[in-house]
Amino acid sequence: MAREAQLVLDLPVDPGCTLDAFLPAASNRAALDAVLAWPNWPSPALILDGPAGCGKTHLARIWAARTDAVLLAAAQVWDLADPLARLAGTRCCAIDDADLVGDEAMLLHIYNLVAERRGGLLLTARRPLAAWNLSLPDLRSRLRAAWTVAIGPPDDRLLASVLIKQFSDRQVRVEPDVVELLVARMERSFAAAAALVRRLDQLSLSLRRPITTALARAVLRDLELQTTAEEVAH
Image (tube, rainbow, N blue to C red):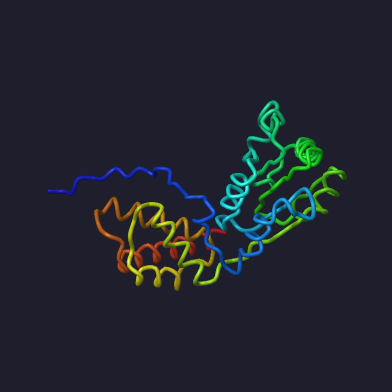
């Protein structure tokens, strides 16, 4: 009899965005120190830039919790009729993916508001400020004066820690040899780690099998073939 098909739901995962859950390493230590340095920042704004999944949003949530800041995604800032009303009486604001700016004038208003209140503005971005292509001179000059910290690519130790944490967030336990294999063969990025854990978790659930080195090799092989096919197509 054919095995009954399993419905796998991609449920939201609690990322545990607290200071205790953050994984410090050489690549992100300067960014963590900058977040914890508040309110002794050298300027009203701090910009954290780095690749997807490197911990920028985690750091923004840590800072927002410590400062009682309003935390907004870029889309909320640009799409709301009156995003300034969201700030109410607060003096701190964090904006995730701020390089996806759709309304430079509104970002300038938010900067000016928190500066007038002697507060702080934390901006995360995947691209460095020079690549934002800002057209408003006042906004450009203010952000150029901001404290900017880049988060670098992970080393093997951090990648392993990220994989273990993401499996743990999904309440999945894996053996050390699985993590060692993944670190040795995976793409060197936080985004790749997240995608790999998600794919392994879904496949494990659908097959009703634990995540073993054999399953990890199969998924890595599929990802390598997919990458090769995409490169050929382009």
